[in-house]
Amino acid sequence: MTKSTLLQLVDGCIARDQVPLITEVNVSLEPGEIVLLTGSNGSGKSTLLTALSGEKFLASGTLTFGEISRSEISLKEMAKKRSLMLQEDEAVDQLRASDVLELASISTSVPGYTSEFVSKIFNSELREKTLGTLSIGQRTRVFLAAAALQNSDVMLLDEPTAGLDTEGISVLSEFLKVHSVNGHALLIATHEDNLRSLASREFLISDGKLSDKSLR
Amino acid sequence: MTRVRPAVLISLLFGLVILAIFANLSIGAYQVSVADIVSAFTKPENVNPITSSIIFDIRIPRLILGIAIGISLAGATTLMQSSMRNVLADPALLGLAAASALGVVVALVMGFDFGGIAAFLFALLFTVAAFILLLAGHFGGKRTSSQSTLLIGVALGAFSLGLLGVLATSLDNPQLRAMTLWSFGSLSLATQTTATVALTASLLGITVAWILAPKLDLLLLGERMARTLGVETRKLRMISLLLISLLVTAAVYGAGVIAFLGLFSVTVARALVGPRHRLLVVTGSLISVLTILVCDLLARSIAAPIDLPIGFLTSLIGAPVLITILARTAND
Image 1 (cartoon, rainbow over the protein chains, first blue to last red):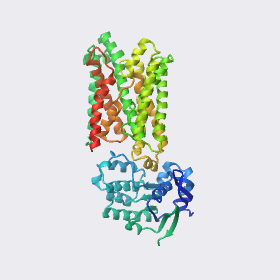
Image 2: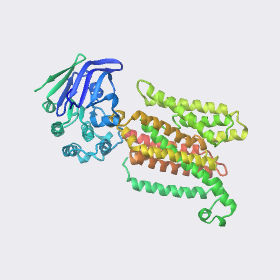
Image 3: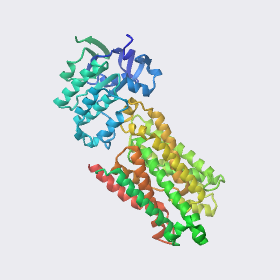
Image 4: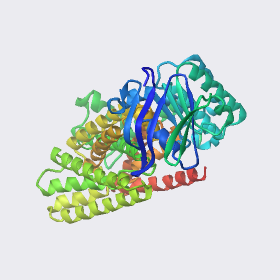
């Protein structure tokens, strides 16, 4: 591992309900890179992303964020290291979209390009609406803005274009490009060509193993 | 439902609560004029001793106990609903209030005084134990289901009240009569001690809830996202558990099980101001205090001189309003 590696998993076993799903997982994410995560439905992409976020599903293996291992880091510190956006959020429907953004703004300052992205993806008409009244695409916009505002070193994104229109996708891919150039790492499970073209590597899950190939 | 401006709503509710406080001090089997109430505080020597005694020994403890119960039930219900992620959670519905009442009766059977600190501690202990049982059922299963939690709570409540009934038979007559009234929820047994203890516990509980509110707000984003944003959700739930138990005990120990008040006021408050905790706790408490004071006034006047258990009134008012709101939100 190079000194600047942002997230690393060595010899990981990803399991759900004690059943191993992916074994011998070796992953590292470096500053400035965008990595794709692919695999067929049910191969365990979301489970892997959750495990890499340090939450659960990691049956064995050593997970480190920067220089600190998972067992030594507090949740508060971890919040600065990685954000995770899964396809389905569990937020209560009565929350207003603006509440979500306010709650997710745990970072004291965000770079200008992030504020710009948030103002584009989270258009003002969303503000006063409650989550229960939003469409899938609008809800995706709210949680993308929330993940960006967390301003962590690594962003783990699961199908971040779900329900987004073409304008939304281009705003997102522009942000991801600038975000990576600014030293952040991104791991994205997606089928969207606009995002695929940004990636330099691909992690492919098949038959319970993870392979790593260069796209450049 | 459209949200209203919080500042306007809170000022309005606050004004109504002040009105209700004066009405409760003034109206009753013995009428006290507002002028006498004011003089009782400012120039006590000008007020006749009977009036003074009615105000300070009967009406004020009853009023304070009512306010303490209003605050605690709104606080406990808000915290239960967010930590269990169930907008139908309520201390009375899920059996915690009955368990707390059982604690008081056990203390009485063991020879401790009604309204004493021992009764409070027993009630607290029984509430914590019942809550742990309830949460074990809630989170213990492979999947959490609100229906099964609700049923566990109902069973827990029925069991506690059953045991309470059996134990109460070993009490002597005046105590038994008091307990019967009390198990329906009544402010008529208020004393200066119960009022003071309940108010202290409720203010303590609600202050801690206020401090925790920003973290509880993050819980609204879902367990996983809250943790991703750095909240130690398990620790937060443990603190909530203790806090809820303290608040439920504060509500039950002086006046018994008052049904529907928490669920009613928090449901109305959420529809008006949304789910963020600081606003919800303040609005819910004001609605709850207002409701209990109005119900108490009715309980003392509609069948005067009979003092009806207030739990009857809160059920009569709370249940229909609650059904209406739930039906409306279900259609949204």
